Length: 602
Ligand code: F6R
Image (cartoon, rainbow, N blue to C red; front, side, top):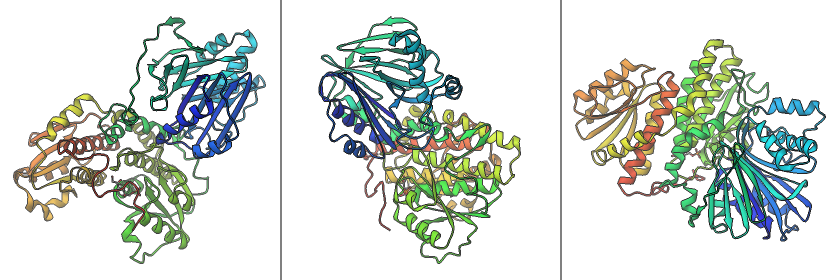
Protein backbone atom coordinates (compact mmCIF):
# COMPACT_ATOMS: atom_id res chain seq x y z
CA UNK A 1 0.00 0.00 0.00
CA UNK A 2 1.55 3.38 0.93
CA UNK A 3 5.32 3.73 0.63
CA UNK A 4 7.98 6.06 2.05
CA UNK A 5 11.42 7.08 0.82
CA UNK A 6 13.78 9.65 2.35
CA UNK A 7 17.33 10.86 1.73
CA UNK A 8 19.86 13.15 3.39
CA UNK A 9 23.06 13.91 1.51
CA UNK A 10 24.65 15.54 -1.50
CA UNK A 11 23.39 13.39 -4.36
CA UNK A 12 20.60 14.36 -6.78
CA UNK A 13 17.68 13.99 -4.40
CA UNK A 14 14.85 14.06 -6.90
CA UNK A 15 16.19 10.98 -8.70
CA UNK A 16 16.77 9.07 -5.46
CA UNK A 17 13.19 9.72 -4.39
CA UNK A 18 11.58 8.98 -7.76
CA UNK A 19 13.64 5.79 -8.26
CA UNK A 20 12.86 4.68 -4.74
CA UNK A 21 9.14 5.34 -5.13
CA UNK A 22 9.16 3.40 -8.42
CA UNK A 23 10.55 0.41 -6.52
CA UNK A 24 7.50 0.59 -4.27
CA UNK A 25 5.02 0.77 -7.16
CA UNK A 26 4.33 -2.96 -6.95
CA UNK A 27 2.59 -2.33 -3.61
CA UNK A 28 -0.10 -0.25 -5.31
CA UNK A 29 -0.82 3.48 -4.92
CA UNK A 30 -2.94 6.19 -6.48
CA UNK A 31 -0.90 9.38 -5.95
CA UNK A 32 2.67 10.32 -5.14
CA UNK A 33 4.67 13.31 -3.96
CA UNK A 34 8.07 14.59 -2.89
CA UNK A 35 9.40 17.49 -0.80
CA UNK A 36 13.01 18.66 -0.79
CA UNK A 37 14.83 21.30 1.24
CA UNK A 38 18.13 22.42 -0.20
CA UNK A 39 19.94 25.58 0.73
CA UNK A 40 16.93 26.70 2.83
CA UNK A 41 14.69 26.45 -0.25
CA UNK A 42 11.66 24.18 0.00
CA UNK A 43 10.34 22.50 -3.16
CA UNK A 44 7.32 20.25 -3.35
CA UNK A 45 5.63 18.29 -6.15
CA UNK A 46 2.61 16.02 -6.13
CA UNK A 47 0.72 14.10 -8.80
CA UNK A 48 -2.30 11.83 -8.95
CA UNK A 49 -1.77 8.49 -10.72
CA UNK A 50 1.53 6.98 -11.75
CA UNK A 51 5.08 8.00 -10.76
CA UNK A 52 5.51 8.90 -14.45
CA UNK A 53 3.13 11.85 -13.83
CA UNK A 54 5.33 13.04 -10.96
CA UNK A 55 8.43 12.64 -13.14
CA UNK A 56 6.82 14.80 -15.78
CA UNK A 57 6.01 17.51 -13.22
CA UNK A 58 9.58 17.55 -11.89
CA UNK A 59 11.40 17.34 -15.22
CA UNK A 60 12.80 20.88 -14.98
CA UNK A 61 13.79 20.54 -11.34
CA UNK A 62 17.12 19.33 -9.98
CA UNK A 63 18.63 19.25 -6.50
CA UNK A 64 22.24 18.14 -6.29
CA UNK A 65 23.70 20.14 -3.37
CA UNK A 66 23.47 18.99 0.27
CA UNK A 67 19.86 18.71 1.32
CA UNK A 68 17.05 16.70 2.83
CA UNK A 69 14.26 14.98 0.94
CA UNK A 70 11.14 12.91 1.60
CA UNK A 71 8.76 11.13 -0.77
CA UNK A 72 5.60 9.04 -0.58
CA UNK A 73 3.24 6.89 -2.60
CA UNK A 74 -0.31 6.98 -1.25
CA UNK A 75 -3.09 4.43 -1.48
CA UNK A 76 -6.21 6.38 -0.54
CA UNK A 77 -7.86 5.47 2.76
CA UNK A 78 -9.00 8.71 4.46
CA UNK A 79 -10.09 10.93 1.58
CA UNK A 80 -10.05 10.50 -2.18
CA UNK A 81 -6.90 10.13 -4.34
CA UNK A 82 -6.39 13.84 -5.10
CA UNK A 83 -3.31 16.08 -5.11
CA UNK A 84 -4.50 17.79 -1.94
CA UNK A 85 -4.70 14.46 -0.16
CA UNK A 86 -1.35 13.23 -1.53
CA UNK A 87 1.68 13.37 0.78
CA UNK A 88 3.92 15.18 1.69
CA UNK A 89 1.52 17.35 3.70
CA UNK A 90 2.44 20.95 4.33
CA UNK A 91 1.97 23.06 7.44
CA UNK A 92 3.22 26.64 7.25
CA UNK A 93 6.88 25.70 6.73
CA UNK A 94 7.21 21.92 7.29
CA UNK A 95 6.37 18.73 5.38
CA UNK A 96 5.43 15.28 6.57
CA UNK A 97 4.98 11.82 4.99
CA UNK A 98 3.25 9.07 6.92
CA UNK A 99 2.25 5.42 6.55
CA UNK A 100 -0.35 3.90 8.87
CA UNK A 101 -3.41 5.37 10.54
CA UNK A 102 -3.61 8.05 13.22
CA UNK A 103 -6.61 6.75 15.13
CA UNK A 104 -7.20 9.90 17.20
CA UNK A 105 -6.81 12.30 14.27
CA UNK A 106 -10.35 13.63 14.48
CA UNK A 107 -9.90 14.67 18.08
CA UNK A 108 -6.50 16.28 17.28
CA UNK A 109 -7.92 17.99 14.21
CA UNK A 110 -10.76 19.54 16.21
CA UNK A 111 -8.29 20.76 18.83
CA UNK A 112 -6.06 22.36 16.17
CA UNK A 113 -9.00 23.85 14.27
CA UNK A 114 -10.20 25.51 17.48
CA UNK A 115 -6.76 27.11 17.72
CA UNK A 116 -7.19 28.52 14.22
CA UNK A 117 -5.34 25.94 12.11
CA UNK A 118 -6.64 25.59 8.58
CA UNK A 119 -6.66 22.05 7.12
CA UNK A 120 -6.22 21.53 3.40
CA UNK A 121 -6.71 17.77 3.09
CA UNK A 122 -9.14 15.11 4.31
CA UNK A 123 -6.32 12.92 5.61
CA UNK A 124 -5.42 11.82 9.11
CA UNK A 125 -1.74 12.63 8.34
CA UNK A 126 -2.10 16.39 8.16
CA UNK A 127 -2.55 16.68 11.95
CA UNK A 128 1.10 15.63 12.40
CA UNK A 129 2.62 18.60 10.62
CA UNK A 130 0.31 21.11 12.33
CA UNK A 131 1.02 19.64 15.75
CA UNK A 132 4.76 19.93 15.05
CA UNK A 133 4.47 23.59 14.11
CA UNK A 134 2.28 24.34 17.12
CA UNK A 135 4.88 22.88 19.49
CA UNK A 136 7.75 24.52 17.59
CA UNK A 137 6.06 27.90 18.07
CA UNK A 138 6.01 27.23 21.81
CA UNK A 139 9.58 25.97 22.28
CA UNK A 140 11.63 26.98 19.21
CA UNK A 141 13.26 23.54 19.63
CA UNK A 142 12.55 21.34 16.61
CA UNK A 143 13.41 17.96 18.16
CA UNK A 144 11.43 18.76 21.29
CA UNK A 145 8.49 19.77 19.08
CA UNK A 146 8.79 16.49 17.16
CA UNK A 147 8.88 14.44 20.38
CA UNK A 148 5.82 16.26 21.72
CA UNK A 149 4.06 15.62 18.41
CA UNK A 150 4.57 11.88 18.38
CA UNK A 151 3.61 11.62 22.05
CA UNK A 152 0.12 12.84 21.00
CA UNK A 153 -0.38 10.25 18.26
CA UNK A 154 -2.40 7.06 18.73
CA UNK A 155 -2.38 4.32 16.12
CA UNK A 156 0.16 3.03 13.65
CA UNK A 157 2.74 5.18 11.94
CA UNK A 158 6.01 5.50 10.12
CA UNK A 159 6.79 9.21 9.80
CA UNK A 160 9.37 11.44 8.16
CA UNK A 161 9.22 15.17 8.77
CA UNK A 162 11.31 18.04 7.41
CA UNK A 163 11.00 21.72 8.24
CA UNK A 164 12.39 25.10 7.31
CA UNK A 165 12.84 25.51 11.08
CA UNK A 166 15.77 23.07 10.82
CA UNK A 167 16.90 22.68 7.22
CA UNK A 168 19.65 20.12 7.87
CA UNK A 169 17.62 17.50 9.75
CA UNK A 170 15.13 14.72 8.95
CA UNK A 171 12.96 13.67 11.91
CA UNK A 172 11.62 10.14 11.95
CA UNK A 173 9.42 7.88 14.10
CA UNK A 174 8.08 4.36 13.82
CA UNK A 175 5.26 2.57 15.59
CA UNK A 176 3.44 -0.34 14.00
CA UNK A 177 4.32 0.51 10.36
CA UNK A 178 7.64 -0.55 8.87
CA UNK A 179 10.57 1.83 8.40
CA UNK A 180 14.31 1.41 8.02
CA UNK A 181 17.44 3.51 7.82
CA UNK A 182 20.06 2.93 5.11
CA UNK A 183 23.67 4.04 5.24
CA UNK A 184 26.39 4.59 2.68
CA UNK A 185 29.38 6.69 3.78
CA UNK A 186 27.80 10.02 4.85
CA UNK A 187 24.56 9.46 2.96
CA UNK A 188 21.49 8.46 4.96
CA UNK A 189 18.41 6.86 3.45
CA UNK A 190 14.95 6.07 4.78
CA UNK A 191 12.38 3.69 3.35
CA UNK A 192 9.33 1.66 4.28
CA UNK A 193 10.96 -1.51 2.87
CA UNK A 194 14.45 -2.24 1.60
CA UNK A 195 13.86 -2.37 -2.18
CA UNK A 196 14.11 1.44 -2.72
CA UNK A 197 17.57 1.59 -1.18
CA UNK A 198 19.12 -1.59 -2.59
CA UNK A 199 22.06 -0.62 -4.78
CA UNK A 200 22.31 2.73 -2.96
CA UNK A 201 22.88 1.98 0.72
CA UNK A 202 25.29 -0.74 1.85
CA UNK A 203 24.09 -1.08 5.44
CA UNK A 204 20.69 -1.01 7.03
CA UNK A 205 18.97 -0.67 10.40
CA UNK A 206 15.36 -1.84 10.75
CA UNK A 207 13.63 0.47 13.23
CA UNK A 208 11.70 -1.09 16.12
CA UNK A 209 8.28 0.08 17.29
CA UNK A 210 8.56 3.07 19.60
CA UNK A 211 11.85 4.28 18.10
CA UNK A 212 12.27 7.84 16.87
CA UNK A 213 15.03 10.34 16.32
CA UNK A 214 16.70 12.58 13.78
CA UNK A 215 19.30 12.36 11.05
CA UNK A 216 21.84 15.05 10.23
CA UNK A 217 24.87 15.09 7.94
CA UNK A 218 26.51 11.66 8.41
CA UNK A 219 24.90 10.85 11.77
CA UNK A 220 21.68 9.58 13.28
CA UNK A 221 20.42 10.02 16.84
CA UNK A 222 18.03 7.23 17.78
CA UNK A 223 15.80 7.11 20.86
CA UNK A 224 13.33 4.84 22.57
CA UNK A 225 11.30 6.20 25.50
CA UNK A 226 13.64 9.18 25.87
CA UNK A 227 16.76 6.99 26.10
CA UNK A 228 19.35 7.12 23.34
CA UNK A 229 19.74 3.75 21.60
CA UNK A 230 22.78 2.41 19.76
CA UNK A 231 22.24 1.60 16.11
CA UNK A 232 23.46 -1.87 15.14
CA UNK A 233 23.79 -1.78 11.38
CA UNK A 234 23.67 -4.87 9.22
CA UNK A 235 24.64 -5.50 5.62
CA UNK A 236 21.90 -4.85 3.08
CA UNK A 237 21.01 -7.63 0.61
CA UNK A 238 21.92 -6.88 -2.96
CA UNK A 239 19.19 -8.81 -4.85
CA UNK A 240 16.03 -6.74 -5.45
CA UNK A 241 13.70 -9.57 -6.38
CA UNK A 242 14.71 -11.42 -3.25
CA UNK A 243 14.03 -8.30 -1.22
CA UNK A 244 10.63 -7.76 -2.84
CA UNK A 245 9.73 -11.26 -1.73
CA UNK A 246 10.63 -10.27 1.87
CA UNK A 247 12.35 -13.61 2.43
CA UNK A 248 9.46 -15.74 1.10
CA UNK A 249 10.22 -18.32 -1.57
CA UNK A 250 7.52 -17.11 -3.93
CA UNK A 251 5.33 -14.04 -4.32
CA UNK A 252 2.28 -16.25 -3.89
CA UNK A 253 3.56 -17.36 -0.49
CA UNK A 254 4.20 -13.75 0.52
CA UNK A 255 0.73 -12.78 -0.68
CA UNK A 256 -0.89 -15.54 1.37
CA UNK A 257 0.88 -14.20 4.46
CA UNK A 258 -0.10 -10.60 3.59
CA UNK A 259 -3.81 -11.37 3.62
CA UNK A 260 -4.27 -10.57 7.29
CA UNK A 261 -2.80 -7.07 6.83
CA UNK A 262 -4.46 -6.16 3.55
CA UNK A 263 -7.82 -7.17 4.93
CA UNK A 264 -7.55 -4.33 7.43
CA UNK A 265 -6.83 -1.96 4.52
CA UNK A 266 -9.95 -3.24 2.75
CA UNK A 267 -12.05 -2.32 5.77
CA UNK A 268 -10.44 1.01 6.74
CA UNK A 269 -12.92 3.88 6.67
CA UNK A 270 -15.72 1.55 5.58
CA UNK A 271 -16.95 0.38 8.97
CA UNK A 272 -18.23 3.27 11.06
CA UNK A 273 -20.45 3.17 14.16
CA UNK A 274 -21.50 -0.44 13.64
CA UNK A 275 -22.50 0.18 10.04
CA UNK A 276 -20.91 -0.50 6.70
CA UNK A 277 -20.34 2.54 4.55
CA UNK A 278 -18.77 2.77 1.07
CA UNK A 279 -18.02 6.36 0.09
CA UNK A 280 -17.90 5.12 -3.52
CA UNK A 281 -21.68 4.55 -3.51
CA UNK A 282 -23.66 7.76 -3.39
CA UNK A 283 -26.74 7.85 -1.18
CA UNK A 284 -29.22 6.94 -3.91
CA UNK A 285 -27.14 4.44 -5.91
CA UNK A 286 -28.76 1.34 -4.42
CA UNK A 287 -32.25 2.87 -4.13
CA UNK A 288 -34.16 1.42 -7.04
CA UNK A 289 -32.59 -1.99 -7.38
CA UNK A 290 -34.70 -5.11 -6.91
CA UNK A 291 -32.17 -7.78 -7.92
CA UNK A 292 -28.45 -8.31 -8.48
CA UNK A 293 -26.65 -10.01 -11.33
CA UNK A 294 -22.93 -10.70 -11.01
CA UNK A 295 -20.60 -11.59 -13.88
CA UNK A 296 -16.97 -12.66 -13.47
CA UNK A 297 -14.42 -15.31 -14.50
CA UNK A 298 -12.24 -17.83 -12.67
CA UNK A 299 -11.37 -16.98 -9.10
CA UNK A 300 -13.49 -13.85 -9.23
CA UNK A 301 -16.45 -16.00 -10.29
CA UNK A 302 -15.97 -17.97 -7.08
CA UNK A 303 -16.29 -14.88 -4.87
CA UNK A 304 -19.34 -13.92 -6.92
CA UNK A 305 -20.93 -17.29 -6.24
CA UNK A 306 -20.15 -17.16 -2.52
CA UNK A 307 -21.58 -13.64 -2.30
CA UNK A 308 -24.86 -14.72 -3.88
CA UNK A 309 -25.56 -16.72 -0.70
CA UNK A 310 -24.80 -13.62 1.38
CA UNK A 311 -26.90 -11.20 -0.68
CA UNK A 312 -29.92 -13.47 -0.51
CA UNK A 313 -29.45 -14.39 3.15
CA UNK A 314 -28.52 -11.00 4.60
CA UNK A 315 -30.08 -8.48 2.23
CA UNK A 316 -32.98 -10.67 1.02
CA UNK A 317 -32.38 -9.65 -2.56
CA UNK A 318 -32.35 -12.03 -5.53
CA UNK A 319 -28.82 -12.58 -6.80
CA UNK A 320 -27.84 -14.49 -9.95
CA UNK A 321 -24.27 -15.21 -10.89
CA UNK A 322 -22.93 -15.99 -14.34
CA UNK A 323 -19.58 -16.82 -15.85
CA UNK A 324 -18.90 -13.82 -18.09
CA UNK A 325 -17.95 -15.85 -21.18
CA UNK A 326 -21.28 -17.71 -20.99
CA UNK A 327 -23.35 -14.64 -20.27
CA UNK A 328 -22.09 -12.84 -23.37
CA UNK A 329 -23.57 -15.24 -25.88
CA UNK A 330 -26.76 -16.46 -24.21
CA UNK A 331 -28.93 -13.49 -25.18
CA UNK A 332 -29.68 -12.77 -21.52
CA UNK A 333 -32.91 -11.12 -20.37
CA UNK A 334 -31.98 -8.06 -18.39
CA UNK A 335 -34.14 -5.92 -16.15
CA UNK A 336 -33.35 -2.23 -15.61
CA UNK A 337 -33.87 -2.53 -11.85
CA UNK A 338 -31.11 -5.10 -11.58
CA UNK A 339 -27.74 -3.95 -10.27
CA UNK A 340 -25.04 -5.39 -12.51
CA UNK A 341 -21.86 -6.21 -10.59
CA UNK A 342 -18.60 -7.24 -12.23
CA UNK A 343 -15.75 -8.65 -10.19
CA UNK A 344 -12.19 -8.70 -11.44
CA UNK A 345 -8.77 -8.56 -9.80
CA UNK A 346 -7.08 -7.15 -12.92
CA UNK A 347 -9.94 -5.05 -14.25
CA UNK A 348 -8.93 -6.05 -17.79
CA UNK A 349 -10.58 -9.44 -18.34
CA UNK A 350 -12.06 -9.28 -21.83
CA UNK A 351 -15.14 -11.42 -21.19
CA UNK A 352 -16.07 -9.54 -18.01
CA UNK A 353 -15.56 -6.19 -19.71
CA UNK A 354 -17.80 -7.17 -22.64
CA UNK A 355 -20.49 -8.48 -20.27
CA UNK A 356 -20.39 -5.09 -18.52
CA UNK A 357 -20.78 -3.22 -21.79
CA UNK A 358 -23.82 -5.36 -22.66
CA UNK A 359 -25.45 -4.64 -19.30
CA UNK A 360 -24.80 -0.91 -19.65
CA UNK A 361 -26.31 -0.93 -23.12
CA UNK A 362 -29.41 -2.56 -21.66
CA UNK A 363 -29.66 0.36 -19.17
CA UNK A 364 -28.58 -1.42 -15.96
CA UNK A 365 -26.72 0.35 -13.16
CA UNK A 366 -23.20 -1.04 -12.91
CA UNK A 367 -20.77 -1.52 -10.07
CA UNK A 368 -17.35 -3.12 -10.33
CA UNK A 369 -15.31 -4.65 -7.55
CA UNK A 370 -11.72 -4.51 -8.59
CA UNK A 371 -8.14 -4.36 -7.35
CA UNK A 372 -6.77 -2.03 -10.03
CA UNK A 373 -7.87 1.59 -10.13
CA UNK A 374 -8.32 3.14 -13.58
CA UNK A 375 -8.46 -0.31 -15.20
CA UNK A 376 -10.83 -0.78 -18.14
CA UNK A 377 -13.57 -2.37 -16.04
CA UNK A 378 -13.36 0.37 -13.38
CA UNK A 379 -13.54 3.08 -16.03
CA UNK A 380 -16.46 1.44 -17.81
CA UNK A 381 -18.57 0.99 -14.63
CA UNK A 382 -20.90 3.61 -13.16
CA UNK A 383 -18.98 3.22 -9.94
CA UNK A 384 -16.31 0.96 -8.48
CA UNK A 385 -15.23 -0.32 -5.11
CA UNK A 386 -11.51 -1.00 -4.91
CA UNK A 387 -10.45 -4.05 -2.96
CA UNK A 388 -7.10 -2.53 -1.81
CA UNK A 389 -5.17 -5.80 -1.84
CA UNK A 390 -2.07 -4.10 -3.23
CA UNK A 391 -0.41 -5.43 -6.36
CA UNK A 392 -0.64 -9.20 -6.64
CA UNK A 393 2.32 -10.72 -8.46
CA UNK A 394 1.56 -14.43 -8.18
CA UNK A 395 -0.55 -15.47 -11.16
CA UNK A 396 -2.68 -17.65 -8.89
CA UNK A 397 -4.81 -15.13 -7.06
CA UNK A 398 -4.91 -15.23 -3.25
CA UNK A 399 -5.14 -11.85 -1.53
CA UNK A 400 -7.22 -10.40 -4.36
CA UNK A 401 -9.73 -13.23 -3.87
CA UNK A 402 -9.79 -12.67 -0.10
CA UNK A 403 -10.37 -8.92 -0.37
CA UNK A 404 -13.05 -9.31 -3.05
CA UNK A 405 -14.87 -11.62 -0.67
CA UNK A 406 -14.64 -9.08 2.13
CA UNK A 407 -15.99 -6.25 -0.06
CA UNK A 408 -18.91 -8.43 -1.16
CA UNK A 409 -19.68 -9.47 2.41
CA UNK A 410 -19.62 -5.81 3.47
CA UNK A 411 -21.81 -4.85 0.54
CA UNK A 412 -24.38 -7.50 1.44
CA UNK A 413 -24.51 -6.05 4.98
CA UNK A 414 -24.79 -2.52 3.63
CA UNK A 415 -27.70 -3.60 1.45
CA UNK A 416 -29.23 -5.37 4.45
CA UNK A 417 -28.98 -2.07 6.39
CA UNK A 418 -30.62 -0.18 3.57
CA UNK A 419 -33.40 -2.69 3.00
CA UNK A 420 -33.99 -3.20 6.74
CA UNK A 421 -33.51 -6.92 6.46
CA UNK A 422 -30.97 -7.09 9.28
CA UNK A 423 -31.74 -6.36 12.90
CA UNK A 424 -29.29 -4.19 14.84
CA UNK A 425 -28.15 -7.35 16.63
CA UNK A 426 -27.54 -9.28 13.37
CA UNK A 427 -25.65 -6.35 11.94
CA UNK A 428 -23.43 -6.21 15.00
CA UNK A 429 -22.70 -9.94 14.71
CA UNK A 430 -21.61 -9.49 11.08
CA UNK A 431 -19.48 -6.44 11.81
CA UNK A 432 -17.83 -8.01 14.83
CA UNK A 433 -16.93 -11.02 12.63
CA UNK A 434 -15.53 -8.71 9.93
CA UNK A 435 -13.27 -7.06 12.48
CA UNK A 436 -12.05 -10.49 13.59
CA UNK A 437 -11.17 -11.55 10.04
CA UNK A 438 -7.53 -10.33 10.04
CA UNK A 439 -6.92 -12.69 12.98
CA UNK A 440 -8.44 -15.66 11.16
CA UNK A 441 -6.05 -15.00 8.27
CA UNK A 442 -2.83 -15.13 10.24
CA UNK A 443 -0.60 -17.97 9.06
CA UNK A 444 0.97 -19.68 12.04
CA UNK A 445 4.26 -21.60 11.80
CA UNK A 446 2.50 -24.70 13.11
CA UNK A 447 -0.10 -24.64 10.37
CA UNK A 448 2.38 -23.99 7.59
CA UNK A 449 4.72 -26.68 8.86
CA UNK A 450 1.88 -29.19 9.08
CA UNK A 451 0.79 -28.52 5.51
CA UNK A 452 4.36 -28.76 4.34
CA UNK A 453 4.61 -32.25 5.89
CA UNK A 454 1.16 -33.32 4.68
CA UNK A 455 1.78 -32.22 1.12
CA UNK A 456 4.14 -35.11 0.44
CA UNK A 457 1.22 -37.55 0.78
CA UNK A 458 -0.82 -35.77 -1.88
CA UNK A 459 1.41 -35.79 -4.92
CA UNK A 460 -0.11 -38.71 -6.81
CA UNK A 461 -3.55 -40.30 -7.07
CA UNK A 462 -6.14 -39.92 -9.80
CA UNK A 463 -7.70 -36.71 -8.60
CA UNK A 464 -8.84 -34.39 -5.86
CA UNK A 465 -12.40 -33.50 -4.89
CA UNK A 466 -12.76 -30.39 -2.74
CA UNK A 467 -16.21 -30.52 -1.21
CA UNK A 468 -18.30 -28.05 0.78
CA UNK A 469 -21.81 -26.75 1.24
CA UNK A 470 -23.32 -23.27 1.02
CA UNK A 471 -20.56 -20.61 0.84
CA UNK A 472 -18.04 -23.43 1.34
CA UNK A 473 -19.01 -24.85 -2.05
CA UNK A 474 -17.55 -21.84 -3.93
CA UNK A 475 -14.58 -22.07 -1.56
CA UNK A 476 -14.21 -25.72 -2.59
CA UNK A 477 -14.24 -24.59 -6.24
CA UNK A 478 -11.55 -22.05 -5.43
CA UNK A 479 -9.43 -24.55 -3.48
CA UNK A 480 -9.54 -26.94 -6.44
CA UNK A 481 -8.71 -24.16 -8.91
CA UNK A 482 -5.66 -23.06 -6.85
CA UNK A 483 -4.40 -26.63 -6.77
CA UNK A 484 -4.88 -27.25 -10.52
CA UNK A 485 -3.30 -23.94 -11.48
CA UNK A 486 -0.01 -24.44 -9.72
CA UNK A 487 0.33 -28.20 -9.24
CA UNK A 488 -1.13 -29.32 -12.63
CA UNK A 489 -2.94 -32.12 -10.75
CA UNK A 490 -6.57 -32.80 -11.57
CA UNK A 491 -8.87 -31.27 -8.97
CA UNK A 492 -12.59 -30.48 -8.86
CA UNK A 493 -14.75 -28.50 -6.49
CA UNK A 494 -18.13 -30.04 -5.78
CA UNK A 495 -21.18 -29.36 -3.62
CA UNK A 496 -20.84 -32.03 -0.92
CA UNK A 497 -24.45 -33.15 -1.28
CA UNK A 498 -23.98 -33.78 -5.03
CA UNK A 499 -21.23 -36.38 -4.72
CA UNK A 500 -23.67 -39.24 -4.44
CA UNK A 501 -25.32 -38.20 -7.71
CA UNK A 502 -22.35 -39.39 -9.78
CA UNK A 503 -18.81 -38.51 -8.74
CA UNK A 504 -18.83 -40.91 -5.79
CA UNK A 505 -18.35 -43.64 -8.41
CA UNK A 506 -14.73 -42.44 -8.59
CA UNK A 507 -14.11 -42.99 -4.89
CA UNK A 508 -11.23 -45.28 -3.93
CA UNK A 509 -8.06 -44.85 -1.90
CA UNK A 510 -6.41 -42.96 -4.76
CA UNK A 511 -9.16 -40.33 -4.80
CA UNK A 512 -8.31 -37.49 -2.44
CA UNK A 513 -11.20 -35.69 -0.77
CA UNK A 514 -10.50 -32.30 0.78
CA UNK A 515 -13.50 -31.77 3.03
CA UNK A 516 -14.43 -28.28 4.22
CA UNK A 517 -16.38 -28.98 7.41
CA UNK A 518 -17.37 -25.72 9.10
CA UNK A 519 -18.66 -26.11 12.63
CA UNK A 520 -20.94 -23.08 12.30
CA UNK A 521 -22.77 -24.15 9.14
CA UNK A 522 -24.52 -27.43 8.20
CA UNK A 523 -21.88 -29.44 10.07
CA UNK A 524 -23.98 -32.61 10.42
CA UNK A 525 -24.94 -32.58 6.75
CA UNK A 526 -21.38 -32.32 5.48
CA UNK A 527 -20.26 -34.89 8.03
CA UNK A 528 -22.67 -37.44 6.53
CA UNK A 529 -21.39 -36.66 3.03
CA UNK A 530 -17.79 -37.20 4.13
CA UNK A 531 -18.75 -40.44 5.89
CA UNK A 532 -20.21 -41.70 2.61
CA UNK A 533 -16.87 -41.07 0.91
CA UNK A 534 -14.92 -42.60 3.74
CA UNK A 535 -17.05 -45.75 3.49
CA UNK A 536 -15.89 -46.03 -0.15
CA UNK A 537 -12.25 -45.75 0.96
CA UNK A 538 -11.51 -42.26 -0.43
CA UNK A 539 -8.47 -40.71 1.28
CA UNK A 540 -9.79 -37.82 3.31
CA UNK A 541 -8.19 -34.61 4.47
CA UNK A 542 -10.73 -32.92 6.73
CA UNK A 543 -10.49 -29.21 7.60
CA UNK A 544 -12.60 -28.31 10.62
CA UNK A 545 -12.54 -26.96 14.14
CA UNK A 546 -14.30 -30.17 15.21
CA UNK A 547 -12.08 -33.30 15.35
CA UNK A 548 -13.28 -35.90 12.84
CA UNK A 549 -12.29 -39.53 13.45
CA UNK A 550 -12.82 -40.87 9.94
CA UNK A 551 -10.32 -38.49 8.37
CA UNK A 552 -6.96 -39.85 7.20
CA UNK A 553 -5.52 -36.38 7.78
CA UNK A 554 -6.95 -33.54 9.78
CA UNK A 555 -6.29 -29.81 9.93
CA UNK A 556 -7.82 -28.24 12.99
CA UNK A 557 -9.04 -24.68 12.55
CA UNK A 558 -9.62 -22.22 15.38
CA UNK A 559 -12.10 -19.54 14.44
CA UNK A 560 -15.59 -21.03 14.32
CA UNK A 561 -17.76 -18.32 15.84
CA UNK A 562 -19.02 -17.17 12.41
CA UNK A 563 -19.18 -18.97 9.03
CA UNK A 564 -17.17 -16.22 7.30
CA UNK A 565 -14.34 -16.59 9.81
CA UNK A 566 -14.32 -20.32 9.07
CA UNK A 567 -14.42 -19.47 5.36
CA UNK A 568 -11.33 -17.26 5.54
CA UNK A 569 -9.35 -19.61 7.76
CA UNK A 570 -10.11 -22.60 5.51
CA UNK A 571 -9.21 -20.49 2.47
CA UNK A 572 -5.71 -20.02 3.89
CA UNK A 573 -5.39 -23.78 4.49
CA UNK A 574 -6.33 -24.63 0.89
CA UNK A 575 -3.96 -21.97 -0.48
CA UNK A 576 -1.04 -23.29 1.57
CA UNK A 577 -1.84 -26.87 0.60
CA UNK A 578 -1.71 -25.96 -3.10
CA UNK A 579 1.49 -23.98 -2.56
CA UNK A 580 3.30 -26.79 -0.74
CA UNK A 581 2.22 -29.46 -3.25
CA UNK A 582 3.37 -27.28 -6.12
CA UNK A 583 6.75 -26.58 -4.49
CA UNK A 584 7.29 -30.31 -3.89
CA UNK A 585 6.53 -30.99 -7.55
CA UNK A 586 9.18 -28.42 -8.52
CA UNK A 587 6.77 -26.11 -10.36
CA UNK A 588 7.09 -22.38 -10.90
CA UNK A 589 4.52 -21.30 -8.31
CA UNK A 590 4.37 -17.66 -9.38
CA UNK A 591 4.21 -18.22 -13.11
CA UNK A 592 2.38 -21.46 -13.79
CA UNK A 593 2.47 -22.81 -17.32
CA UNK A 594 -0.13 -21.56 -19.82
CA UNK A 595 -1.58 -18.91 -17.49
CA UNK A 596 -1.52 -15.10 -17.52
CA UNK A 597 -2.32 -12.59 -14.80
CA UNK A 598 -4.48 -10.48 -17.04
CA UNK A 599 -6.64 -12.25 -19.63
CA UNK A 600 -7.40 -9.64 -22.27
CA UNK A 601 -8.59 -12.04 -24.96
CA UNK A 602 -11.89 -13.86 -25.02
C1 F6R B 1 -6.90 -17.70 -10.75
C2 F6R B 1 -7.15 -16.42 -11.33
C3 F6R B 1 -8.04 -16.37 -12.49
C4 F6R B 1 -8.73 -15.00 -12.62
C5 F6R B 1 -9.52 -14.94 -13.93
C6 F6R B 1 -10.28 -13.64 -14.02
O1 F6R B 1 -6.03 -17.67 -9.67
O2 F6R B 1 -6.63 -15.42 -10.90
O3 F6R B 1 -8.98 -17.39 -12.47
O4 F6R B 1 -9.58 -14.81 -11.53
O5 F6R B 1 -8.65 -15.04 -15.00
O6 F6R B 1 -9.42 -12.58 -13.86
P1 F6R B 1 -9.87 -11.24 -13.20
O7 F6R B 1 -10.22 -11.54 -11.79
O8 F6R B 1 -8.66 -10.36 -13.33
O9 F6R B 1 -11.03 -10.73 -13.97
